Amino acid sequence: MAIAIRKNVEIDKLRAANKIVAGALNLLRENTKVGASLQELDAMAEDYIRSHKALPSFKGLYGFPNAVCTSLNEVIIHGIPTDYKLQEGDVIGYDIGTKLQGYYGDAAITVGVGKISEEDEALIACAKDTLYHAIENIKPGMRFKELSFLMQEFIRGRGYEPLRDFCGHGIGKAPHEDPQIPNYLDGGSPKAGPKIKNGMVFCLEPMICQKEAKPVILSNGWDVTSTDGLRGSHYEHTVAVIGGKAEILSQG
Image 1 (cartoon, rainbow, N blue to C red):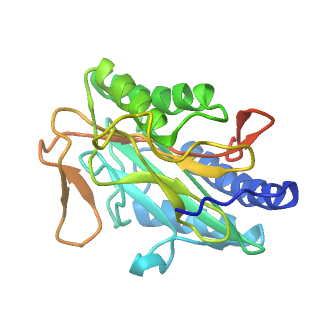
Image 2: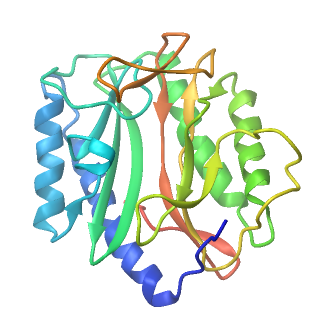
Image 3: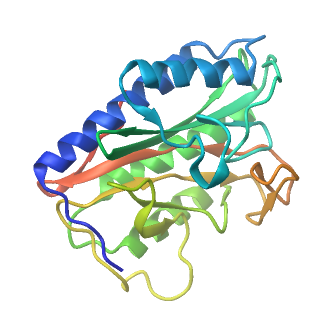
């Protein structure tokens, strides 16, 4: 596993790509309203990305047809935008990638539409709080498996399960690079495997299931749900390890 150590000039380019991601996500958050269609929101984000001289890096990636993953209610990740119009009480996840001057950005949020239930508020909070808890605990010398174990225990401590078979990842001159960073410890000891070092840049993305962690890919080949059929949530940031701690590059 070759995990890149980025120079400051590279991190600056990654920061610029991620700033556009953050702006696009903020735009979607502001326009998450009853009656907005998923395709309209996708087009809005794509226009924003292109107006900032970047490319929507998800569009065409592995055959994905759109700029934004719009994951509605029971869909946890990789939702394809449709003509569905948001309704009061829906939960919607947005995942966006950009490419700017050869470097990539990537982040995700989950938001409620209008007034949502306390249960859905807690579900969304689990993804967001897991992400920030992990970021706050990153330090050089820590193993990536320790980070995975930390996220797993935080998620389970809230009464949820981390989605299996999908993970966070390195990012740089490609949208997905080494290492893979699951939100759970996949066998063995957390004290094994590669260590986090200054200059590494990667994405953490807690994906939350309510009861069952096993994924189901729906008939369109993209939308991922849990076998429990219940709503999920997803949050993601791109972080760079600088000066002994993690800096969020995709902060709004």
